[in-house]
Image (cartoon, rainbow, N blue to C red; front, side, top):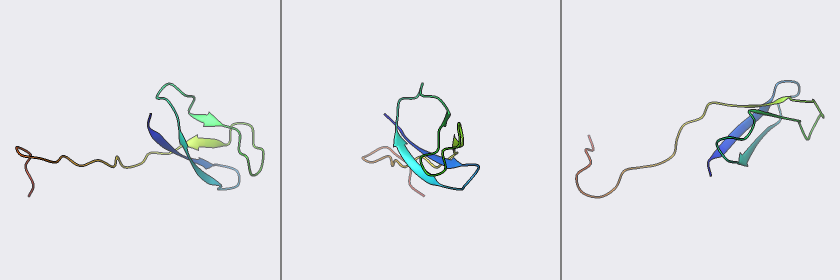
Length: 57
């Protein structure tokens, strides 16, 4: 399952959640209680291709 970053639009609280791809894009904020304040953020994928045959420049 992927690790997603969320940020509350009301108070700015940030957190990461390990969720399935089909999980909703918004959650209630645990800090301020905003109903669907926690919105999924765009983030960088963290992986690297290792072994022979991969180009590294």
